[in-house]
Length: 255
Image (tube, rainbow, N blue to C red; front, side, top):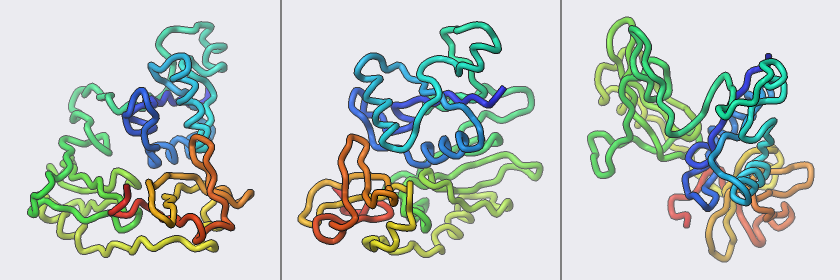
């Protein structure tokens, strides 16, 4: 039987703005797409019903994510077990409110790895703990993680948006990984060129009107030379620099 992954919507595939649709959580979406490409079946697993459920399905389609089942087990799982239980059957359950219960001689799972002990984001204004934005995606949600290893407890840090991180394997305090992370240069977030967009099929970009206005996340569609927004909006390539500009990540002054 193929791998089945049940994925929550609000707070997992997007930020929790219920009953509205939150901002897409691209690291989770990209991971789900990779799992699907590798053969896994994806299940949208949400408490939404009726029109709210359809809005979630439509939003996911706009982000390039199509599900094999919605709020029920995969068809092949149903056939194999001969049941349709209220609890969706799955190999994995992805949920922002989930916690894995520890088994014997295992640490409680609270972060990026099974050996995680403690996970936290530096408090704003604490210069001794401050971590610079991610040098790869520009993300600002950078976490410290304390974890167990055969040599004892160690520290690492990583970006919650693209999962880039630093783990020397020897850091016994946060200061060691902070210094290593903060030495890395943060790339500039210049507006993307047309040639760059044409090399980014299926990737998310942050679209901004040239005359001001709110930023919008869209997916690049090189086949039709457009960027597509979850609710049907389009940014046509030929208007790049005329009516809109695009960035790899949201500018710091973004609305």
